Image (tube, rainbow, N blue to C red; front, side):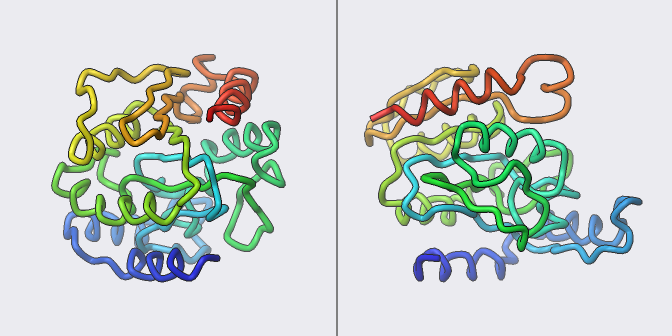
Length: 224
């Protein structure tokens, strides 16, 4: 792990800026989901994970209540991550098709995964002030990923969070609309790509499937 990324991650884990998020996170840790009642929940902000030399950055909105907030790693330990990592493995971006816990041996190739918001918000709806508070961490991640060329936003809310972040940094078109497979080239030369969230709802309704997801991942690997 790059020293600067490690230093940043240490700051993220110690962050206590948003009282509403802390309160909600503490509530989750106390009222564990039944199947995880004997597990110790991470219960702190979640850092990014992956290859620090990555060209591709996957961005979710926030850690899941009983996924990342429990396991301590983004997109780990829930059904969304089960589907996502099967697709990443098939696209040869990860070395295994599962992400269960921090010490499961998972490695990413040319990819990094993070969230726009480092703590789970009530009803998956962050306040603008909370996104603004976390933007400093997201901004530093983007600077430290020096080979970054593509940002894949996992879901419309993550896409809107990325758009909101870049509207404050660049003169981007505010009318950019989320769509699966839609690719936008930003002023700074980075591509912003819309991708359906790998949620059970999207998978079960057929909105997204492994073939569509893997196809998109393979396509963005070729962007230059």
